[in-house]
Amino acid sequence: MPMDGSLKTIYRARLVSLSLPLVGFALGLLLWEVLVRASGQSAHVLPGPLQVVTSMGELIADGTIFKHAVASLFRVTAGFYLAILFGIPLGILLGRLKSAWHVLNPVIQFLRPISPLAWIPLAMLWFGIGDKPAIFLIFLSSFFPLVVSTTVAVGAINPVYFQVAANFNLTRLEVITKIVVPAIVPSVVTALRITVMIAWVVVVAAEMIAVQSGLGYLILDSRNALRLDYVMVGMIVIGMIGLILDWAMRRLGRIEFARWNAGQG
Amino acid sequence: MGKIEIQHLTKDFPNRRRNARPGDDSGLQFGDRIEVLRDIDLTFDRGEMICILGPSGCGKSTLLKIIAGFENPSTGRVLIDDKPVCGPSSNHIFVFQHSGLLPWMTVWQNVGMGLRHMPGNGQRQEKIQEYIDLVDLTGFENYFPYQLSGGMQRRAELARALAVNPDMLIMDEPFSGLDFLTHMKMREEVVNMHEFIGKTILLVTHNIDDALIMGDRVVLMSGRPSEVKLMRKLAFEHPRNYEEEPELNELREELYFMLGVSYAV
Image (tube, rainbow over all chains, first blue to last red; front, top):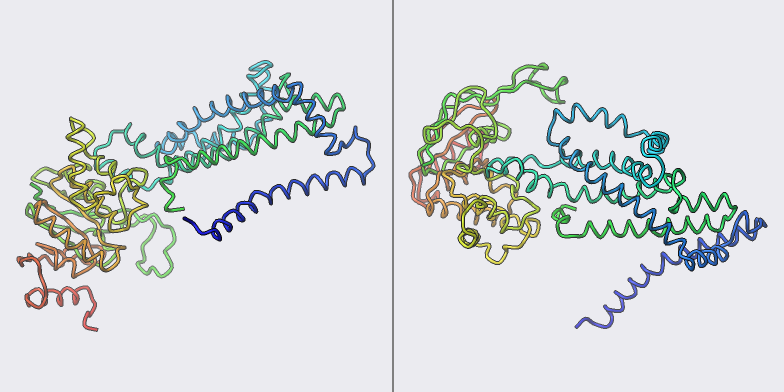
């Protein structure tokens, strides 16, 4: 049985690590309230924390906020999964096949710095209005980073493992399933964690055009109605969902399949 | 099985550096041929333990990789049992200098890698267990390589190599990076295993004592371009020691002298 003293130490450390972030948020709220009072602006221009909490209560009570959050999450999930579905296999191909890399890499590097938002006119022309253009934009925002990270991860695989594969007569398919895929999982999980954040940032912009739902639409619509308190509710919910997404992706990095390099890191 | 003939083997490659490395006084120009191996002619009998010695960077590893089929010679050829080597094969398994275990697989999965086409699951499991027991890793079946000590990793790789029942083992500095005691124990284990299973073992080392204590034959290579400077059969009983075999001691002094060092400091 552990000694009382050591248990106390553990609990104290846990208490500190849980309470300090709350202190941070509390300080932020306090600063916000102080700024509102000091500025003397009306609640229409700069709503205070209390008013935003009340408005959030309204939006939760009538279910509006859930409807918009679900719409945004649906688009991010769809676009992100499409990016995974196409981006990771393409990255593996580029990492394994030198000639494909020479042909496609310049094009990818050329398209990569173009903001997904620059595609908005084309997206609307091709996909009309509704979910499709938004999903397309999210796909674009995640696709290129995923391709590039996967290609880099495949290129960084220790060549010894391919020699081992040849030595034990692994087929081409087995080289992919038994060597390449497990070897890149840790780096790809890290890339996914970064990419999902990009996708989440882009969804808001994508929803300011062409759709009638989602957190981006909520913000735009509330601005048009001069309800800045709702705008801020939208921002807060976006931040909270972002935190949850990041936490979920970190959990993904802890599964055993992604942890074979634990000894090296 | 496992007779090796190396006939007029040379290996060179073009110099890809435009500027000489600091301290490089070779006068090599861009595109010049760098000669690594020059006219190597060697014949080894089946079942022998052959130890190849040489200064570092002399091309010992290149020679091993050519014999293993990972690289092609520039001219000449390698015959194993009168058949020219064309590519890697599970008849001659390479044991890598730094671990060649796949880090995302457990000991069990690594050892089972070469046995994946074995008919009968029960038989396959028995075989895997047999080789894990052989190298004394019983109880560590579900450990990942990073959870094992350096010596245990080498033993696991040895088990994986032996499990496919190859005609020949090719070991590239198998004891490098091990502490002194583990080194001694591993050396003894490899000698015992060799006497027990009687496979041809080709082993590169820069440790003269390893070569003299273990080898049925010792080959000394010169610095780059590498040529065979000495080949000697060692018909001494195991366990060997220098006090009882004055001839062995003389050879040791000769080898130290040829490598340009005096061991009697």
